[in-house]
Image 1 (cartoon, rainbow, N blue to C red):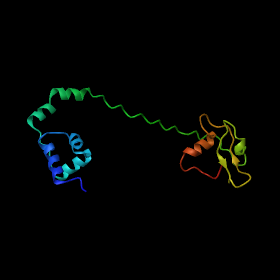
Image 2 (image 1 turned 30 degrees about the horizontal axis):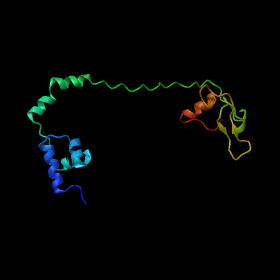
Image 3 (image 1 turned 120 degrees about the horizontal axis):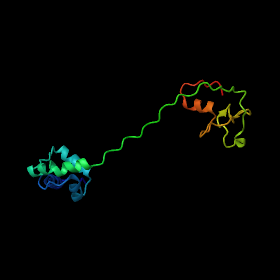
Image 4 (image 1 turned 45 degrees about the horizontal axis):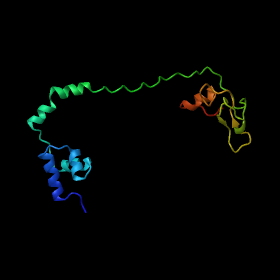
Length: 153
C-alpha cells in the first residue's frame, strides 16, 4: 500500500496553496514527515506564492527587530598554539633505561613499553614521567611527533 494516493496528493497541494500552512503543519495533518511533504512538493514543482499581506508581514519592522535581537553565535574556541618541543634534552639509550615489569610500575613512572612482550627482557621505561603525562619527556615527545626515529628507546 502506497502513502501517496491521488487524494493525499490533492489534499497536500490544496493545504499548501490555499491555506498557506507550513510544511510541518501539513505533515501533522496528513500523517507524514515534513521531509516527505517537502520532497513531494518539490517533485510536483509546487512553489509557494506569497500574498502581498504575507510579504508585508515578513518585511515588517517588527520582524527585522526580532532578527536583530537574536543572540550572536559564540566564536569557536581557539586551538592551543603549537609549542616547539625541547630538543636539547638528552635521549636515553635503550640499554640505560631502568626497566620495570608491569606489576612493579608505580604512579609517576614512565609507562613506555620497551622490547618484545614475548621476550624476558621486556619492560617499561620507568623513568620519572613528565607532569600530567604517562611517559617521560623523551617518550612523550616521541608519542606526539611525526617521523621520529624509532630505533632508540
